[in-house]
Every structure is written in structure tokens, then in C-alpha cells.
Image 1: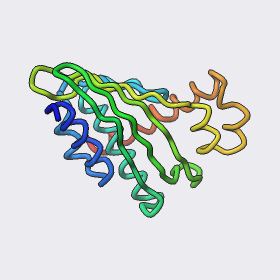
Image 2 (image 1 turned 135 degrees about the horizontal axis):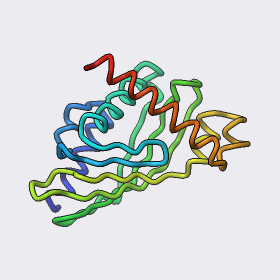
Image 3 (image 1 turned 30 degrees about the vertical axis):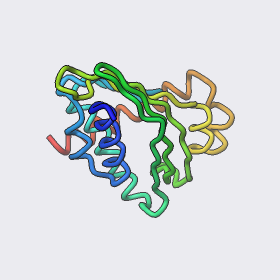
Image 4 (image 1 turned 135 degrees about the vertical axis):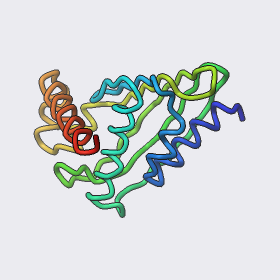
Length: 162
């Protein structure tokens, strides 16, 4: 296994344990992260998001939490993985099963400097938000609203920890 594939594996094993400190060790200081909800620059914001999510899972019900990573591959510069998370969405208490494809770019020291997650936002919204998500999950309006709420939540979370 290439060392960068081992880094991806270490990241997801830590996430499975809800261990953000180990996850943070996998990221470069200048990491950029994006997915359908977040677009973040730097380790502080990116790890703030992961810490916030780990705490939310713990509060909402760790018994509903599971994560499985598969198809992990990497070379000297890039990597990929598929992962699935099952959890209780804290804002609504609804159960979610999200399927995500991740792409990674590594720096010369083997740390992740770009992390891009792709998932079906409409499918996620239907599960996490219920009827409003089923009806409006395909709309840019709902996506922007979820993004704005997530950004506000992250800023509040980081303000408390600063």
C-alpha cells in the first residue's frame, strides 16, 4: 500500500472512531476542502467542520453512527476513496445513509492538501430534512440555504473554541 493510501485509511479509521485529532494529523496546514455543503480553506476551518460533525454525531446518538471506507487508492500525488456514513442528523433527528466519493491531493510530505467529497445532495436532503428535502432537494435554493446554515453553524462553533 502506498503511504498516501495509508494516510487516507488512517483518516477514515479516525473518523469512524470520531477522533478529530488523528484526522487533523492527516491534513496539511493549507488544506482546501469542499463538498456540496462546505467550501473551506485552511486546517482551522476544515478541522473545525470535522470536529463540529464529530460532536454532533456524539450528541445526536452515537449508536446510530457507522462509517465504512472502501476502494482506497493513492500514488505520490493523488488518491481516492469511497465512503458511506450512517448517522442521525442532529438538526432533525432523522437517520441518514450518505454515500460519498472522495478525491485527494497530497503535498510532498504526504499530507492531504486538497480533499473533495462528492455526494447526491438531493438524496441527502430527502433523508436529513424529510418532506422539504424530498420536494426541494434538487433546487439551488435549498442547497444555498443549507450551505448558509452550515457556514453559520461552523462560525459559531469556531468562535466558542477560539
